[in-house]
Structures are given as structure tokens and as C-alpha cells.
Image 1 (cartoon, one colour):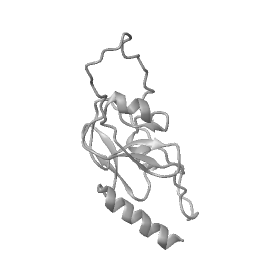
Image 2: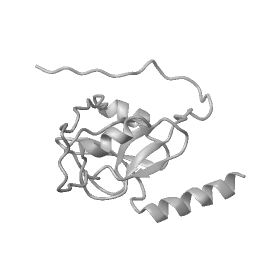
Image 3: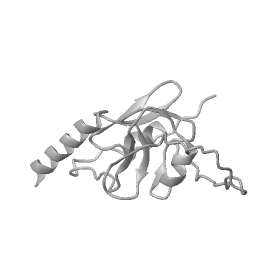
Image 4: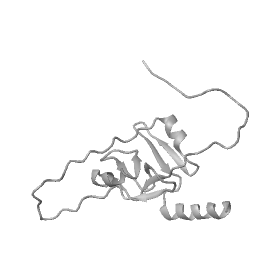
Amino acid sequence: TGVISHIFDGYEPWAGEIRSRQSGVLVADRIGPATTYAMINLQDRAAMMVGPATEVYCGMIVGENSRAGDMDVNICREKKMTNVRASSADETVKLTPHRVLSLEGALEFIADDECVEVTPLNIRLRKADLDPTGRGREAKRRAMAAG
């Protein structure tokens, strides 16, 4: 038994450029597992697209920014451990559930400089250029060409 769905309304004449999203994305700046500690601080700024303990790599999109620009973030940051023990234990903080994209949703979400990576187990979003300095140079070049 299988379930299939799609979004298709029909063919129409060229209507111009397709509008893309207005918000930017959060991009992981290092390799490692996503930590709850880092995600607690980031969830105020963005809708997360990966859950805690998900392995991420440099250039992988981990969330949708609430503002217009893309932002490189350290989603692997861990809490510093000290010998000082507080009388109250770490408070329990709930993370908002991360957004899981289907293949069609991922293809609809990406911008011109982003790719969808499909494996048998995962659908991931990533920047086409994984190097942060290369992405910065490309963004400056596009801004100079546009303005």
C-alpha cells in the first residue's frame, strides 16, 4: 500500500519570475550534533528544521530566519560545565518542534543559492557553496551586480 500526493494545478503561459521567500535561513557553521542548549537560544530567532542530536555539517540549513538575511550559527554549542553546583537544577525548557519538510516542500522552500540533498533516510537543505567565505563573496558580487 502506498500514499502519493502532489501539488499541481495545470500548465499556464509564462507569468514572470516566481516569488521566493522573504526570510533568510540559519546555516550551520561547523560539523557535529545539534545540541538542545544551542537550539534554545536560536528558536527565538528562527523556525528550526533539525531536531536535537541531528548530525549537521558546515553549510547545512538548520532553520528559517525570521529576518531577511542568512545567518551562520553554531548549532553544536554545548553548555560549559563547572565545578560549581547550583541549588536548583537546570530548568526544563521545551523546544518548539522542528519543521519536517517533504521533498516537494523542500523544493518549494529553497532559494537560488540552495540545494536539496536527498538520501534514502533524509531530506536535507544546504547551501550550494558550503564554504562560508565563498558564500560571502558571492553575496557581495550579487549585490554589486544588482545595485
